Image 1 (cartoon, rainbow, N blue to C red):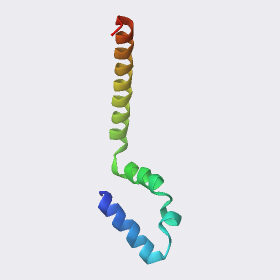
Image 2: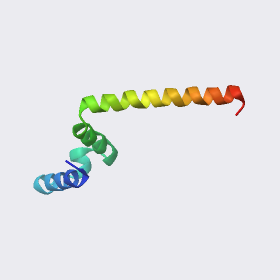
Image 3: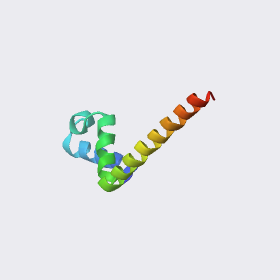
Image 4: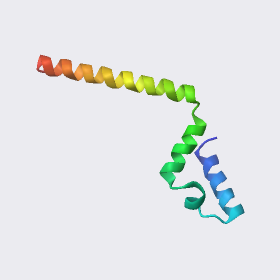
Length: 71
């Protein structure tokens, strides 16, 4: 599923039920998070989180090294 399909699903649901999108799905940010969670497999999300944590730690270490070296 991609964003266009998600939009079509919301539109179809609201047309069928008469519900307002905010009532049926919450705000756009909350719905985007939920849709992304369905689209990204949990193992991939975990790997990305580990990668981001490593990249953050490396960036922090490099910054400290530059600070110590006076760069």
